[in-house]
Length: 151
Image (cartoon, rainbow, N blue to C red; front, side, top):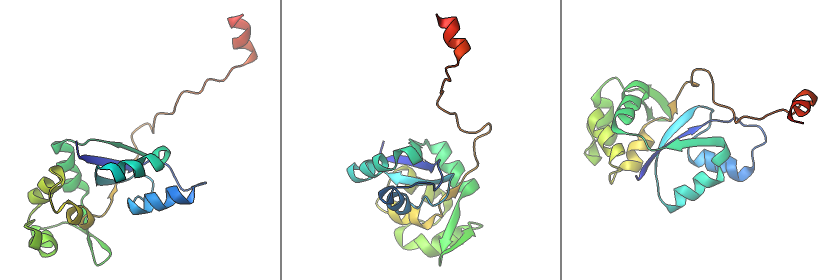
């Protein structure tokens, strides 16, 4: 799989400058922001750098389509514009033969030749926190009683 979806899961406290720079390059400036990413050696190394701050996986066609249709916003002159019609897409990406939502979804899903332009056209996705929050790694507290039971 050459396509990944990366979500930022942690805030800004105590960030190493290298991690901060990597997240900036990924355009993941806020918690719960998500982006599509082309996976290659360079981007995998970048993911490794900011691993504790992001989570990522391989999206399927349905999730790519849902994200673009429901949460897709265009970046036009540095502003976040809702994609209300295909005309917006055609004006910006027409020269790359991307003229409608489905073309955009196809270009992202197949990681086509104009993948970079397509993903840069989209504003980073603003997602909600999962219901019930993120699963914490289980940390067990050893108390005197539990130790007494174990003995």
